[in-house]
Length: 289
Image (cartoon, rainbow, N blue to C red; front, side, top):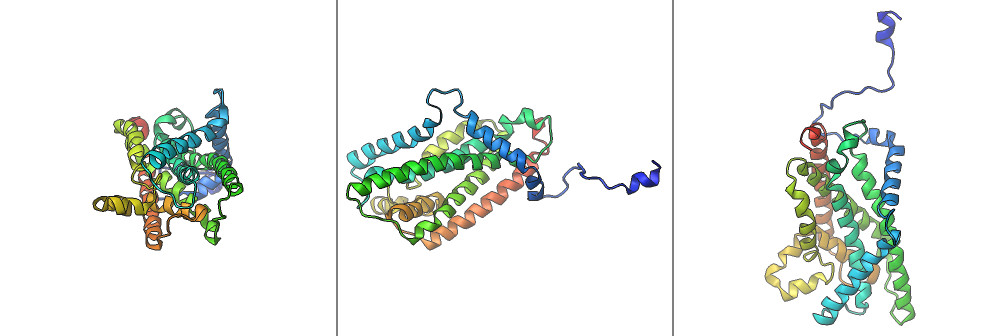
């Protein structure tokens, strides 16, 4: 083959350094979709593979949390949940909140946990956090079935049917929680490559955030009891998602259109900022991890 033939040959793939400041690179992610599904399968199968109860942990965690919230916040503190049974009220909030925290916690260590793989073979790094968000949907689906089972049980006990047409939009809220968790997780995972202390603060910070996200009480209650601290909820996009989710599933609380628009804007901004930082960090993270 002479030089002319070699120069005119068309290559299938070309590996080159990224020179764009911002790139979604979705075309390349789609090309590696089989690898994405393998990572999803890995995340679902291996998490509880060597445990005694296995996938039952998907059910035990939200159920026990809901029971504790019911005892402490409803029976002891006397928080009212309207016509909805307190346990079902808490289970709905915990279910949605758990999906967000799973996405956030699991993606916040992306570079640290996968440094050995990233250092040996090339593939779009975005596939790893994406696989975590998708695999957590499986966990969320199992928990949602448990919620439906208890919902049916309480219907047989005399609870009135509370579903409305707004329930059809519930998957959109789940998507918002996943994207928001993904965006924050990518930001934190990028920062953890240089500041290891952040990995220890994430779990503690998420626990504190839960108490100002209306997980175990209606948004109106905090504004009524502690008006001086109402801004903690008004500027918290997670609170609007959880409040809206409970309204869609249990017809408790309210839907704030302005709050949902605010949440959507924050989610989009956080996701793109996270993607920008993530893409920038993947170029040099191996030197600091």
